[in-house]
Image (cartoon, rainbow, N blue to C red):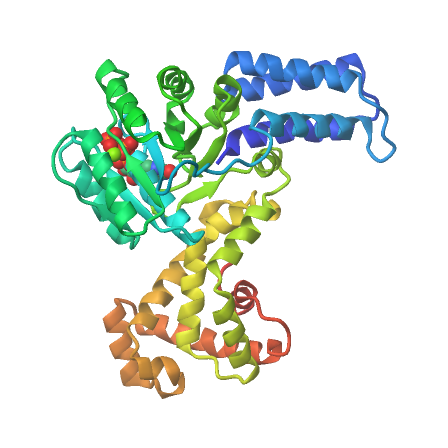
Length: 444
Ligand SMILES: Nc1nc2c(ncn2[C@@H]2O[C@H](COP(=O)(O)OP(=O)(O)OP(=O)(O)O)[C@@H](O)[C@H]2O)c(=O)[nH]1
Ligand SMILES: [Mg+2]
């Protein structure tokens, strides 16, 4: 996410940081570099112009701060203005109006509405809501089944209604939610290849009938400036309340994120960073600005780790560590928690020191994790609890069952024993599963 622009800007800013006197020439050069970097990232031309005008003006008129060098102050100004450009403070869904609240998703075909509906449902449930997913896409065959399938894989409820009138279906969904005590309806609507009147009429009729507290525009960040133009057209017809940018895990250059707020005035609520239902992140302008400018997004990481790691299980595991009864069952649980964060490379991407690391370097560690998971899955529950009983013939059976080689099983057992010894030593300290995994030789 934002790698290219980030590299460009960091180069400019690191030059700037060292500047002891900000004169017209050095400032002019920095602003020119910034301009190139932003335009290359596909940021809207007008937005770039305004952004640099403000930065330039503030940099010239800056107060002298003792704690920062003049160059550092310019960097600080760029950061502050970048935060503003991305929307300032974090904005969440409104969830307003009568219960069940309706969150309606609109956007072009393939932008990621259906996927985002499942992702939002998952997020809502994690924060204590009980969402109902409902598709009113009556135009594309199998569109409703697609949402139902995604709902099933995320263990969410999807509404299955009768008929092919979107407004009628949506009303049925709201009624079903009310009857079943569900407090939010996430409404997935039909997309079209191009902007067309019929689609707009349909969306407008839904807004009129349901009066949703949130009308969210789902924008494909790969579409670049086109996405920004399209949202303006939607905004002219529908009372949009925010946007979700999808596919920021791909090679989007980030220009949409840096233009959409300025052009439309709508906050970015979430960003999609993958195809799985967990791959949705709250959008924090300050953290993203820090990430772009190279200050590392440590807060997002900490939050993710906290979400993923079940506190009770961790406490229990700590106890078992102290008593040195740690088994493959516990180990498997740790891997599951690690998987909730995503991949190792995702984890590292968010750390300042991890940013420079080529994901190729991390690939072997990820292969190990996958292989080890398969091996542990092929063990019997008894073997997982008493690894010392795994003799030669069991090793051969496990290797066969997991599609690995006996050497792989041996390697895992060896690492596990080393880990166990290490953990006994660490037992008296506070245990953090991630640290433990790493000290046990997993991951880079
Ligand atoms: N990599 C990545 N892929 C995504 C993301 N969001 C959606 N996709 C993929 O984009 C494709 C289209 O997503 P859908 O959710 O079906 O899009 P839609 O807007 O519902 O499309 P229509 O219903 O046809 O209008 C799917 O293959 C998704 O897996 C994302 O954040 N990252
Ligand atoms: Mg869809």
